[in-house]
Length: 335
Ligand SMILES: [Zn+2]
Image (tube, rainbow, N blue to C red; front, side, top):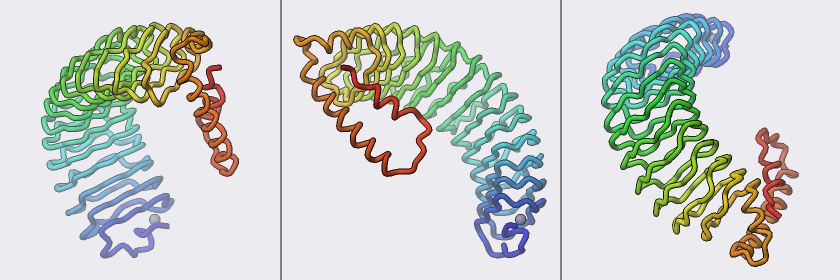
């Protein structure tokens, strides 16, 4: 039973009704600013609550409609299989829609700053909202185009198999386009600081953007070169079978290049290096005259310290680590 069912909600400005098996209708609560409903299997109706600023509901399978609440700033709707429509709420700033399989369109909400939708398979078009600053589209099988919104800071598109092109968006700082197999090129976006284009099977080159600080391009099978960008700090380029060199960039301090079988050399000044399964590098490291040998010795010492340290930490903890980092640590030694 939740605060609504037991009738003690009067005067509350924030209400959380989580996992209530009895809740069917939310009453119109005066003064309510924030309402969160999580896992309420019988909830069918949300009223138009005057003054509500944040509305979030997740796993409410009987919800079919969201009221057009004037003044609402943030709307989250997750796992609502009967929801067919998002209202065009004037003044909404943030909209998050995840796993709403019947939604077909996102309205053109003037003033919307963050738009995120994931696993909404019937959405075909992203609205061109000029105020948008952050745009996330994940697992959108029918989306064919990203609008060119000047002023967008952050674009995240993943698993969008029909997108063929990323527009050259003026002002974009972070671009994440992951597992978009039809993209062949990353545009030369001057303001870009962070680029993640992992698992883009048809990318052959990366742009030379002076301001780029971080590049994550693992699992790009056609990528043969990393641009020589002076300010690049972080590079992850694991599992790139065509990559033969990484430019010697003075400012680079972190490289992860696991299993790049053609890789022959890496910059000499990197302090955080993760390398494993790079066949030619391994041969080079074995040689006594290798320029890398001194550094590799210290690296191995560091790895030993890491392993011992982490093993003892794991021994003390009951945490069940799902990811395979323990295997990774055991395997990362290159001698
Ligand atoms: Zn209840």
